[in-house]
Image 1: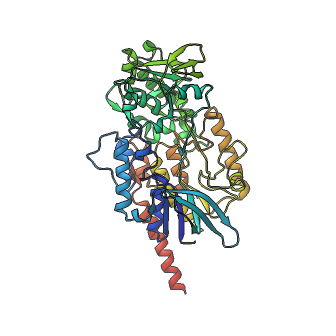
Image 2: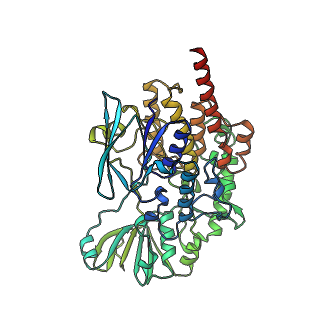
Image 3: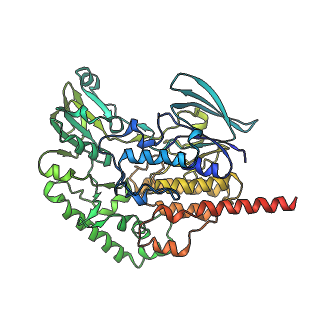
Length: 500
């Protein structure tokens, strides 16, 4: 395959792809629009109170552990520092172009190369040519803020409206009436962080969802329940194999009892009935959207009256210094912070290219969440909402090495299209349409990784797979894979040289 590889984005996916591809002798160039690496962990996007959802050992790359001095749930700043040191440790930090925005990416059918127009923060513009292009700008690339009625009157009177990723200074909440839109992790994190300094903090929750405590009964780390193969197997995957068949077949009563007991513990531990925040739906619905951990202190602040949650409501209109809710209630507001999700867009592609990788609803049509079938020399990595996003990206990069090397026997084109159709329909059904434009993987991260490894005939050892049924999946479980694949490539190269 061509040796010049362009990578758009320097988060977990972009950096792990660069590291893997460079290990296999390819020339990589990573283009990142922010002034630092990290993606969602960049300093320009870190809201107050940002920490990982995963415990430290389950959020490491396979061959580069996080510092043991890091806490169980590292801060956003610590994760960014970890990724910077990762690039430096594997000596590809000089292959990263920061403050660099890709404004156009176009494929030339004659030369079979990609030409990228880039613009740097200094204003300098140039073009780069690559044999392969890998998009790693992530599913959290462009903040989404609803178009509220009355926004001009609100901002004209001095009000501020922003996304959670744009609220990076806690001092902006001092003595302000803060309204948080959304009930996901970022919304609750920001709301809880502002309580100490704001005049008031109100969370608007259109829908209540289950949140999982970091430690159930304040004892058992949630990773032993949900970050294992058994925990993942409790939720029904698109295709049932192995022990999954038992859990969703004759073993269904056992599976239901396990989920029911966890639901009971969470309900009582968080006093959801007492504070009026019970979701009134089964715990298993966490498989329909992004699984959200409890923000430490959030429910205590609700119980103490320091933080208010208006449930089953949303903004109907903005006025100078206030918000009108869909219930008719009017509350004071100086700062509105929206945890309202993201747009999954690829603005550097023209309309024709975009139409080849997405459907009419904007869903990405990618085989294995990586490969567009109608655009050559192009792939995506990190286009999945995953519990183990770092491992999904790293193993995905190995899959791409094999694909671009011609070492994967892919199904027929019609079968791949049918698989894409089936997965999009399945995502639509199980997430009630909230599948991040077809990129939702949670909570089936390990299932996806297994599919990658099966395609490239690089299976995890049986003993390791067995241990993952009861112990959390961690980065070092996959440490040997890059070396094994590299040895296979070297053996094939030596055999070819000997035959010539």
